[in-house]
Image (cartoon, rainbow, N blue to C red):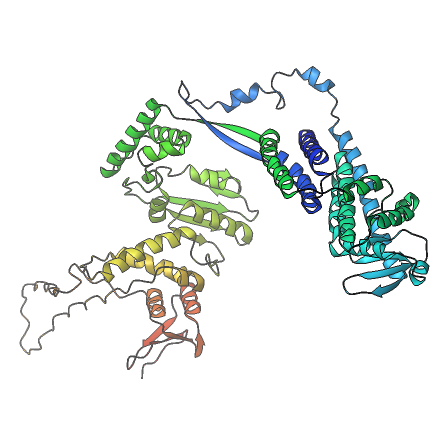
Length: 624
């Protein structure tokens, strides 16, 4: 903060010196008005700018990350400072900040008080509305002054017409040109940056330039200069200014000599242009001198390390093609070198193999089972080992770490055993942890059954699996190709689709429109005869019907009749209307009922190409 303050003071000092030497005595008041405001903003912004420069550095030795060793050489963030000396150093920062806040409160109080005084003066005195300003008539003897559109005048002198016309014109100019905006801005900045002494000098320069502008406007109205100067001398009063005009534009006692000098000055257009052009190199020098340049050293990977990375990246693809997982050390080394590369080196090197994070083809032939027991106190017993609830994710991560997330979703089965008084929050938390771990199925066993995914829908991993399978089969069907449908994929798609919420179904891949499987072959009929039956050889099983040459060229043999739950889900996809004990329900409610009680009777009918109607009932269904 101290460095920023010093840079701000230095930058403002140079610009103010430039103004005093080359601009203040020139008759170019509009340009000077904006220059003074610009100089304040420029001085506050430039020291805060930080330009970043990137420098490449090639390490001569292999990259070694030893954060613990480096941290041991530091003493509370200060390198090379003994602890006994560091303890003797007095931290004066809190003292300086305390002084700053005291000054901030003092100047802020003055700023608000002055505004409030002007507001009260406007409210309690008589006002005369003019075209673009308002005259406020004050009983006290004050010098005419202006604040925004309000011109404060002595009531008796105005009514007696003792206020000269040129004085009124002077104050009207302040109101029309909105000089009070500049004053309020500089007063507010003075509150924030009261420790910067040059703020006060800049404020005086701004107010003096406002008087130059008002004087210029008066003299342009064919008013005699000597008469106007005598009028100004008659209105000087330093006591009045201190009492009433702290935030207003008024005739100033201390600046009258400079104003009389400027009234006689004439500045040519060439001089204005020349001084304006001189400002450009000055601003460039200030920008370079007072802004901050931060150098960031980028470790550029050496040629040897780059060749090592390219070799690993290339061989990794060969490993993947032959279903062989590379060494974990090679993968970590590849990631380490890639992280150190510059953007240019990454573009020139081999593409970072994304397959590192994808599923490998390690065969898994056995089903892994996770058993978790939760007692009434919420304690967990996992594989005969007591595990805390917070430590459960870490414990599970050590199980089957040779499997990817997708492989776990296909092979891992989880059983959660609960008591009658097991806390429901603990059960749901454990269920979520096991779901995030990647279990294919989760079964809660105990006195009370829980609906795991009730109102929650499918998990993120299940949505990824569903979208992958659905997109695969939808692509095949859209291309009218011969496809091979795996019945386990159909069951998995149906299961996940039944878990989805309405929002998930709307955002997911459409459920594939699988063609209907062929009907099963009819059983052979028995022949009736009065003759005693002769023991004959068992007839051979009929051959399965030959598949027609259609789009389905490799259809598997028909499976047993569809499970009632799967049938309800299939009907939901076709837009069927569901009824439960005579009352119409939604498809999601029907699926949820079937999950809870698979003994519910199902009657499904469709006539005349209309939407199917599915009736669910706990009582037996009579077919008429």
